[in-house]
Image (cartoon, rainbow, N blue to C red; front, side, top):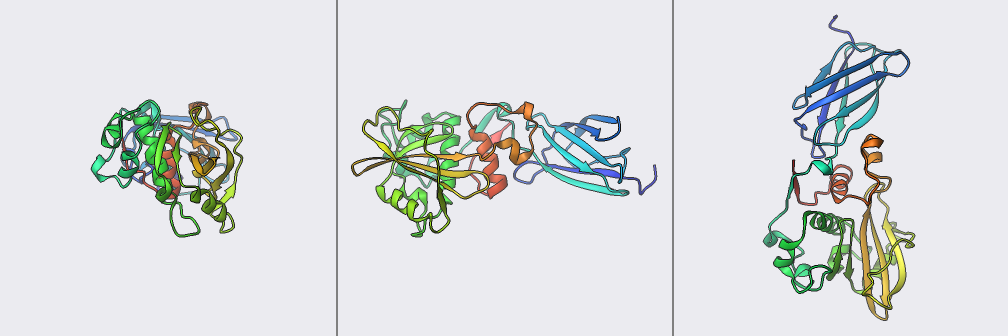
Length: 292
């Protein structure tokens, strides 16, 4: 093989920009000719070089890469006529392969007061503060950290951020939480539409918890991010204000990372997927790490 023959050079990274460090399977299928190359158990802790491929003008391949602990990704690659064709590919974690999650200690949180004042969270009634924090399962806790992180980074036109208005948690799910907020947050969110910080959104699929009798729809708003939008849906009863706060994956983890369709679940948005979108697309670190 000549030194200037076409070669594919791959750099396989996680959302933090670090090598995934696993043995991966790589499938390359030519898009015109009936040529198919499979390489198994390739070390991805360093750059991977693949020889024996055709170059331009017959260098178009569909490439699928499957790491053990990450979701498989598919991309097209058009090989150059000679030398190296470089591709850097980022992989999101596979939620099914997460053995545990490392969260910050309670003493290091900047939302301790919210936890302290939340003594009636559905399923955790009668506990609050550090006790509540310790009792939360990984899915609920990850969802909480995702939304807190995004709320902290979401400004309003008055100079405050969304997190500063969140007062009491009432229900925590992996993909959203319900919280008491001052009605000022609703007004400031509406005012922030003209500043292009939010836009009105459909609230049809959002409903207050059954225990909040008499609360009615008071509008829904989303941030203008391409991926990982923060959505605030408000419900009012007199001067009382409840917010359903969630992060929309805006087309799904598959669209963001080009994940193979058959590797995706059709269930509700997984908080670990939202974590990967926030880190990769918005450079927002929710503050927890996966153990795989």
